[in-house]
Length: 249
Image 1: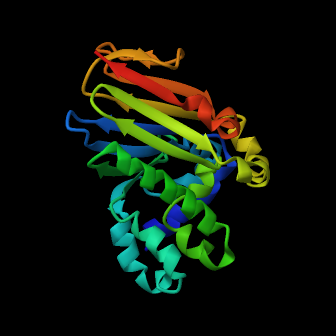
Image 2 (image 1 turned 60 degrees about the vertical axis):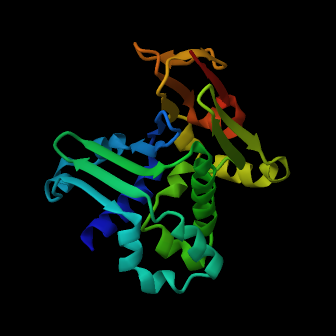
């Protein structure tokens, strides 16, 4: 499948250049919503020679992890049972790739719906687990086809979300016992990327925001959307810096 091969190539190359990662959360009145991680690696396209781009067709494609798992079921069946279970949690994710050689644009997005923000704990834990799976030789070929988690990095934190209609909380707790070695290795491996990359939170709520704990947050005109931007390197070193509490009117 040509799209899979192209996805794999760009997943690897995207870790070599600066990019912007945006964590988007849309919450409805009943607490359900949509979660996405969006990566803008257009700087990668800008670095590529025009001659090498002429042969590539522009792509604007959406496909699902479930579809990919079906097509690669034989390879996945060779993984340990525990790793298969972790991959299965990604079945409800959709992927969108938008590559435009003329505009020098490359955008990647992973998204899924949720019934409660509490489900996002499993989402982030799964992405971190895929990171760990890719560090093993036996799994690298399989998982690299599906998610550029090596580009997302890992900061060894446990991320929790809660929402009750009156307050929204995003809280990252650093796993101190593992932070020294694993986090240091991750930071060193991707230091060049993180130095010029940004991590952005963009949260969309059904009610107007009355108060937020992070003083750098920007508001939309209707005060229902907040945006917080943080240097990726600092976020990786101090994931709890993006902990926020939001109160609504």
